[in-house]
Image (cartoon, rainbow, N blue to C red; front, side, top):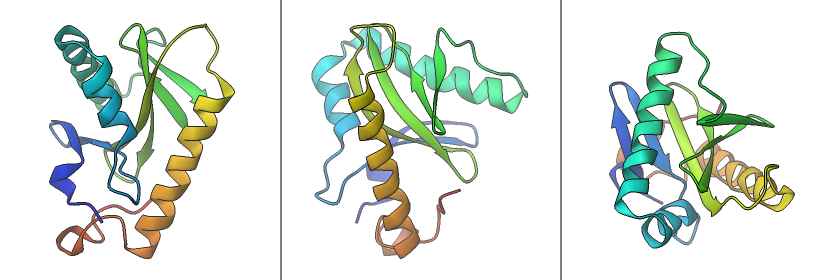
Length: 143
């Protein structure tokens, strides 16, 4: 299980952005973030988190050049040339599944499949109560 503070990527007002953490305690998104992004790209990703929160809080849709819907209730943050796939959970929480470098216009099927697998794991483990540790159980319920 993971402590909520350990998976926190970013907070903006009531919005919470979390790195997905697998059963082994690893976060593919966080690992990619540290290994592949330079400081400017990290700043750009944080700005995209702000942007998403501001857009949705004001009832606007984000610019698809910055944050794009990818189908199956997934979306991509796009700090060029990288992509971070994510999904919403109940409330104002976003789970970031993993990152990869964009090499073509269309989202690769294997990257989408990976995000869906991570989301299913997250939903199963939160439903069972074994994603977050005891002090934070019940904080998130998948939508």
